Image: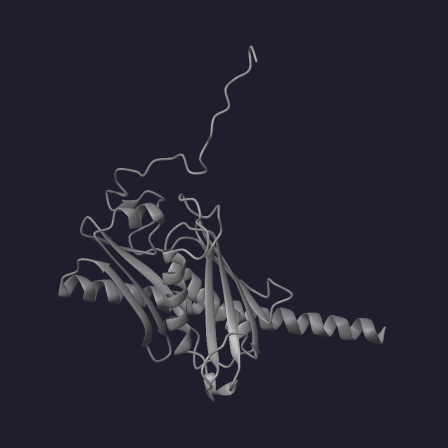
Amino acid sequence: MAGQREAQSVPWFADERPAEVIADGVRLDGRSLEEFRNVFLKTGVISQASGSAYAEFGHTKVMVGVYGPRQSERRVEYSEQGRINVDVKLASFATRQRGIFGQSPEERELSAGVQAALEAAADLASFPKASADVYVLVLEAGGGELGVAATAAALALADAGIELFDIVVACSVSRVDGCLLLDPSTDESFREQGGLVLALLPTSNEVTQLVSRGRWSGSQLREGLELAMGGCAQLESAARQCLKDAVVAAAAKQRQQQQQAQA
């Protein structure tokens, strides 16, 4: 038609990766090398679930729902121990790449990583012959998805009332141009020469999951782990405060309901 502009396909992510992510010791988003992005944690966000949590680390946004413990819908070998099943999905709009049919290799890798991080924390003997199904949805992938998903999933398990030996906290570290960056963004991870994700039980410092990629010397890996452990200590405070806030809010709601019933 005369005068009509030709339609163009505009991708969701049209921006290019920055050439550098560190300038004069400061990251592009203004953070210091050992600083987290803005962190927001909240439980009880899915009313139909047994337990749920939402975690936001900068542009990384993750929602988790836990269902059960209940009789497993999967055909598995008989066991007196309970079982945790984890299914991670990336929303179709979460990444630069378009989704594929079925579970992608990245989703399978994230599912296995989160499950390994959680299994050592849960008292599986407390729900024998049953399973807790953990569904993780990555709403936006802005970097450090495995650590954010593991932390959110642990909060959701606690919200579901599943007995835990300790809360799980996890964070990522990237090595870029000789600098160690805590809680890297997607652009920082893209430029890394090495990266790692550490999940642990903070009270005992028991590591439940460790994933490394790239090349590390012995001293570099030691420094990276020390930074990750320090980051996990910071996350522990935020995670425990999130659970305390949920308990206080639930108690206040119960008192309000009792007062309304007596009125």
